[in-house]
Image 1 (cartoon, rainbow, N blue to C red):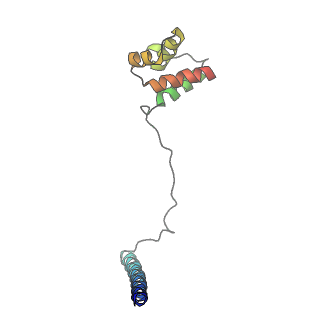
Image 2 (spheres, rainbow, N blue to C red):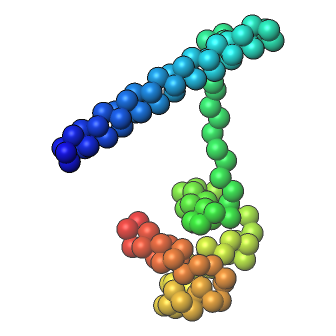
Image 3 (cartoon, rainbow, N blue to C red):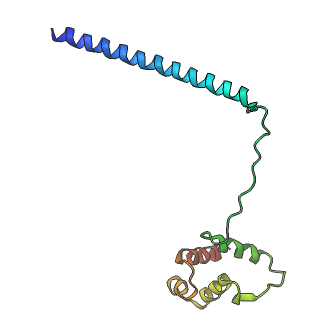
Length: 129
């Protein structure tokens, strides 16, 4: 008796699952037909007729973490060119100067208001370069 009851429930659940699948397919077909007729009425173009997608580069703001460090490194590459403003305008020049004097990254971070991780990055890059 128990086996027959389990078998009955199994058949019922299989039929219920099959019915749900059929209803889902019918619903999707109806929605596709509805969308197609709406496009015909409005005269919308197909996606194949649309112009291709064009990508444009993303301009990152300078206030992103390490953005100023990268800009400062780019400035250092042009050593032959005269710098405008010197260390007073570029806090990263001041960081390099203080690192040369032997100050710690925590002290420099509190003095110049730059995150300590950026100062440690500058110190690491100076050791590599």
